[in-house]
Image 1 (cartoon, rainbow, N blue to C red):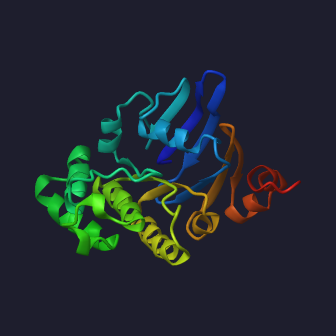
Image 2 (cartoon, rainbow, N blue to C red; image 1 turned 90 degrees about the horizontal axis):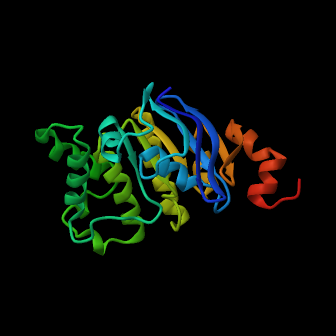
Length: 238
């Protein structure tokens, strides 16, 4: 397994954002995570990426315990993430944003970074905007830049946080194509998304969270048919 969570727990006072979560994600697969607002989805990403420290449990990457590792150490081991609200360096160009990410992770030799960043810009549809300041981008372009910055770190595992949110249907379909190609390249994906049809077009398995608990996991269509999932996530009476 590339990523393993074992009884991972985190609480803020009486509010549990991760309640003894067990999870295993094989390499080169895509896992989708859904759940209502406040279910603990982004907190789970913060725990995996190192922005939050757990109260209990363990996080392992390819068998290595990274529970107490720093954010940068995790990036160097191949963990990358995007943010629900894009957070580019607005005064830097698109290309410079990728250079910063690649340098931070330190997973490529300096001589290879420029070429790799150019290839990633082409893959994510940003090559023509390479010299544009990030603060001038549209929402779709900023979402693409979030994805491109994550890829610039040469990741083994990418955590995608609602990158389809706010996009038109046509824009979402373009994004789905890009994420599929990332998966086909052998990069493992864990994707949080409210645009469920985007997830179902890509992921191999689906997990549902509610109040920090994992309430369902399995084949995506079967999970979506679950009465408990329909009641909690969709508001449909079981």
